[in-house]
Image (cartoon, rainbow, N blue to C red; front, side, top):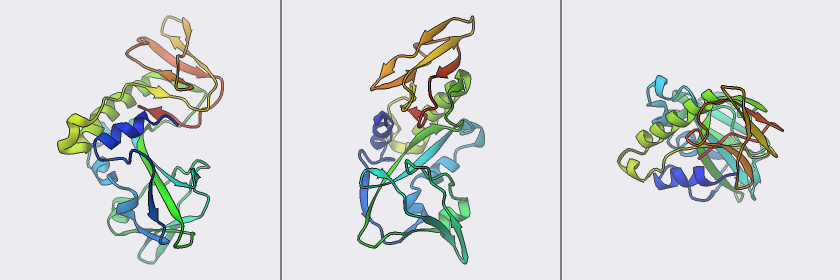
Length: 212
């Protein structure tokens, strides 16, 4: 996983520079777990339509496998997670304010939390470059707004990496193709360096779309 996206948010005090550890008391306030999601929701809908904030729960360096639930009053809703620990269901505003997350772990267990911006489109071996362009632009502006007074410390979002894909190509509007550059072991798309891209073709579906 490309950690430049983590550094981006760490500089704005929105992310931990490395996964933070906290005692898993089985019950965690939703606002504590989904930190800064309220700031994301406060952005106008038109300014966050192409990017989201992804939350990953880690245990012992791996994605959390224990079950988790969102609890609000008497309602208890399962929180689905990918194998890498990404939480696939984000809280509603009401859950964020009053909800708690229950995790099926002993009190002595420790968890790590990693979060960062990602495009709203799902990982695929064939991607619309324009959609990625829009996600990069929105995330760059949105993260600065979310950072508030620390906005100047937030580095720009410039590219999308595709970890888990061995290689890929850029298809340009005129039909030309060129290999995607490899950055930190992952094929990476940088719109400023590859203008006129139409589609991204990967040799395998990537594990995630890592914006940094």
